[in-house]
Amino acid sequence: MKETTAAKKDGSFFEKHAEIWKFIKFTFAGASSSLIELGVFALLQYVVFKSLNDVPVTDSPVLAFLGIEYKGYMYSYFISTVVGYAIAYVMNRKITFKADANPLLSTVLYAIMVVCTIIFNTWFGAFLGTLIKNSGHSNALVELLTKVVVMSVPTLWTYPLNRFVIHRKKKPEAEQEA
Figure 1 (cartoon, rainbow, N blue to C red):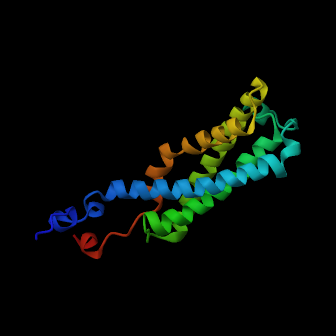
Figure 2: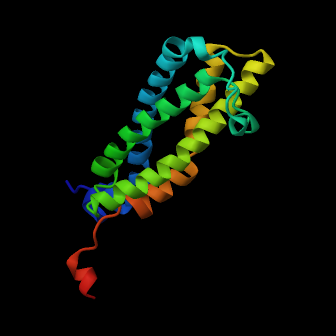
Figure 3: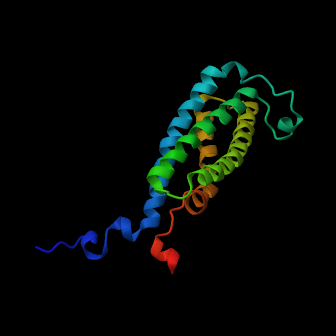
């Protein structure tokens, strides 16, 4: 009996669709780190910084201008995002992209991307949290769903940057000499 699987004919699915497979692994790593990030957010938002969820940010005209009004939301978004991105870095470097490029350069580039993303997530999350709180629709389910939305938006820039800039593989020596 002849085997006619994709693996026997022209290579495996993973070889034929390497880019799709990388995106699937990136999504899995992101989902895994996002679950941890969401758990950290919930712990901070509803336990650690619960008393600060009604405390206004009064000492910063910049934060007020950006629509960030409450300290608890700002702290919860900031810390949980840092934790999530640290976990994602390790998973993507080791598992998703199997990067072997200069780890120091990769870490610096990743840190720059993450700082920009954390600024965005902290602003966007605290801004949406403020809108929800001021609309009177604030509850745990709505806030957690909002966090999921805020965590998902940066995929628009994090996948391309991770894949093509940060977690590169060195070219094989044969390609470098050609």
